[in-house]
Image (tube, rainbow, N blue to C red):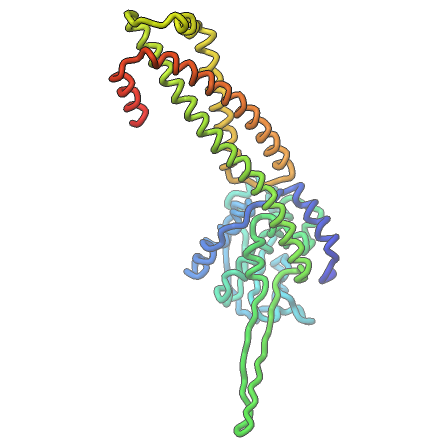
Length: 363
């Protein structure tokens, strides 16, 4: 396979994978790093697998860092760059076996399915790099379990890991830079600094930056859309809360008047208050409030539920935004009508009863 490709190829691959997987928000990798630092390697690997939707059981064994990854028992691709003999040029080595009886992705058979992993014994030295390596290797399992046509394509495998939320940690962990200093001479001292950079993954720096920015921009587009609808939803919720409060006063004020028929009511209000007793009138605004509560619940569930973003989500958010705009306009009309009605009733309510209801609202 070529070591470098044009960004047009990366863009085409990303668009294809986005149609299948969508894109997840960047993972909070701090927990994974902490697990690796605490030598809880298997737990960290299961966490990485979980982000990829692989509820597998992992069996880890360790080999020396000079281990040559050519065992016939393991179908794998060495993620670190290799020399002409096929050996890793320093850094971390990971091999993940891909059994022939691997279940299909998302099926119950994948739960606790055993996957064997070999790691070099220096894997803890750079937790971010280990996460990068394993996200790539386990993405091979993901693509293989889907029988994806590019399941053996290393570029697709790197991009899959990025779309599943590992782009940020891969940006941190894909390169290890080691610097060493040596001094020679006695009177004329010469200091030589040697820098060695090990790059992990199959994307060139330019390919990676392009893929990273594309992924991040896609996420930002969704985030901006969600932030806008969340802001509109918060305003809608405040209006809904005020309307429900008016509804509370309306019901209780009307009940109070029905129990205190001795009240002297102004002529211009008698017909209005009589209208309040019509079932169709009362049911109308109660029904309207209930419908708005359903819209509120549906939107909150969509916004707050962790999900994978797809191109379809943009259209869904736009549809919800339109629904929310219409619902807000209707609720605003309902609010002003209800406020006017409560104002009519309030004139005939005793002071102590008003205070009693206000106390109930506060409590």
